[in-house]
Every structure is written in C-alpha cells, then in structure tokens.
Image (cartoon, rainbow, N blue to C red; front, side, top):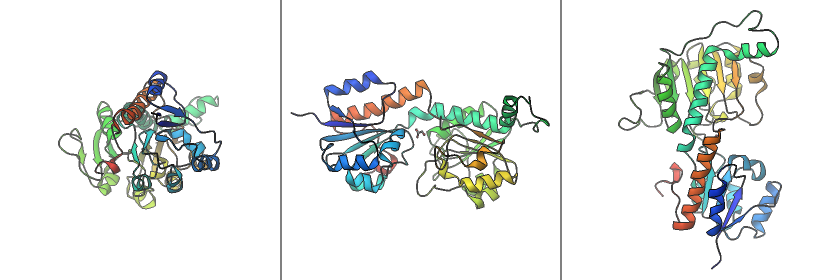
Length: 332
Ligand SMILES: O=CC(=O)O
C-alpha cells in the first residue's frame, strides 16, 4: 500500500526527531515553487495529489501567500487536514476549509507562557517609559536632555484584558504578581473559576476603566480594527496599550494619531498591521516600545509548538483525526 503524503510548508527548526519519525507512516514532500503562482501551479499539475495533511508555519506565508479561498480551492481533493504551527490562524480562511471538508488545527496552549511573558515585558516597559531613555543612552545622551518624565508603577493599576483565552489568562496570573487589578472582556463571560476571579466587564467598561489595555484576541472579520478612533476616544487619557495578538485588531493610523495627541501615553507592540512593515508614526514615537513579532520566539516554545503540531500530523496518520481543531470547527 502506498503511504499518504505530508506536505511541509516552512521549516522544522527544533523537533527534528519527532518530524523524522513520521517517515515510517508517510512520505514527506516539499514544494519546488518559489512563489504563490508557482505553488498554485504545482497544486494544479498534480504534484501534491497524494497529500493527506499539510504542515504549515506562519512564515511559509512568504511562499504561498495566505490560505485564502483561492488557495484552498486549488488544493488537491486528497487534502483533508491542515496543521498550522501557531496559535493565531488568521492566515487561513477557515470557512473555505470547512466548505471543502478540510479540518484545521493550531497550537494554542504551547504559546501561552512565552507570549504572556513578552506581554508583561511590554506592559512594564511601556508603563515605565523605558524606550525613550534606551534610545538616548545609545545616542550617547544618557537619560536624554531633558530626561523623559518618570514612569508609573504597575501596583494598583487596572489592567483590562481584551480576550481572555489561554494567553489572556496566563497574563492575568503574571500581572497579579505585580499587584495589578485585572478586569476582562470576552465575547462570553468565562465559566466557573476559569477567569481566576478577574471581573467580567462590558467592552465599553473595559475601555473606560482600564489604565492599561492588553489586546489578546484573535484576528478575524469581527475583530479587525476592533480598536479604532471611537474606541480610543473612550479610553482614559494617559492609557497604556499593549498588543501581542495581531496588528490589525487595532487601527494603526488611529493609534498613531491618539499617541501624537497624547491621549494614549505609551504603547508596547509585538505585532503590526502589515508585517514586516511598521507604521512610520510608531517608529518615530519614543513612547512606543516595539518588538518584531517575537511572542513565541524562544527555544522552549518553538519546540513545544512543533511537538504539538507534529503530534497532530501523527494523529491523522495513525487514527485519521486531529488532536485539536480550531474553535470554528469544534461542533462540526
Ligand atoms: O504569533 C504567533 C502565533 O500565532 O502563534
């Protein structure tokens, strides 16, 4: 019997042994394509006709482009599963996959610690206004002349977490070690003690009450530009905003404007609307602490994500089902 094929889009960086062990169950294939047009052509000319499952990375979007309707439609009929190595799967059109009977998995839990750690680093750094003096030190100007105003302590500040999933909940625990009071908003109030005692508030209340707003929600059609001119205007003057989710949940142009007017005091960002481009108004502003999408960029987390994603591929090959599917497909 011929083995099914697994298509690798992107690289395995850490879990080499786990990956290689799949070869007893499947043939691993890679694209020859150098860009999206060539990739679609390879799909059409039968190169992937035996592929049952695709393992893809966030970075592989540079080769294939997004897994949008066009791409999903062009995949051969044999493809039944896509294992995405990342928590956020906004590069994949889930409705298009569902329509074709393709099940999609992601790597949710594995990312929680490292992303929440970076989130907290950005909160502390933005609150303290460290970025301005870090720049002036490197320019040979010590703290700057004049030095920037002193920062603020986290103790007693209200942290509003928008999106209380795995990362939001992990952040909540960490923030409490710094004596912040956590409130949250989600589409639905969390059951039982899942929120760990954090107060559930409406979206509007979260915007109005928070000293620091942390964006921890996935990007989809409902959350794109969830924070724009109107929402920024509802926030406290001097608010601090941190985003480790996806750039497009906030309207970057509106954010730059609110920073320039001083309504938003400072910002910590790991993600941007058009990565790897960063809005020049963010780069120019010393009150903005910028990190180039490094939320999960640790040896341990890279390894844990790959292990999880490979175990999903293995599960498909051994038992015909994924270990987890994205929330949109849970009830299918
Ligand atoms: O951005 C990182 C992820 O979605 O895992």
